[in-house]
Image (tube, rainbow, N blue to C red; front, side, top):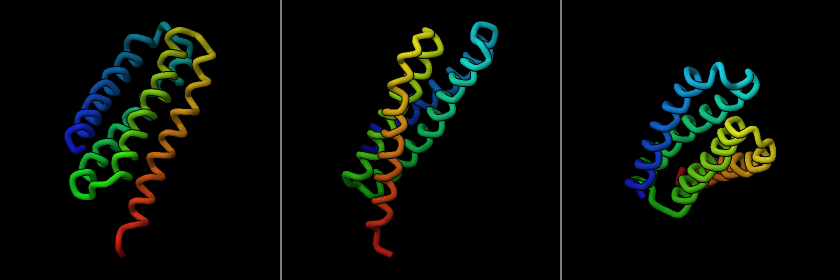
Amino acid sequence: MLRTFLLLAAFFGFTGVGLGAFAAHGLKGRLSADYLAIFQTGVHYQLVHALALLAVAVLANTLPGRLVGWAGGCFALGIVLFSGSLYLLTLTGVGKLGIITPFGGLAFLAGWLCLGLLAWRLAP
């Protein structure tokens, strides 16, 4: 699990920085201010959860178990669904893609819940 989550963290961190730069320099004149803000929200959540995946990679090495795996899986799924749907929505203009975004948010919440349950189960 360590390698998988470390690779995911690196991939999503790398692409998050790249997409942020793309939005700032390549999309600034092409998207409305509202759509640019939506795109940047996707980048923000992607980068935050790339760091969360990095933490999961470390935890997977020290506290192996299903909850750690579930947390990492939920964070990765959340990035794809939440951020991915925002990217596609802004780049294509297809508003119906916004229906996917809340499922990504739920995946993020589930990931944080798994980490909370893991912490709760640790011996004091």
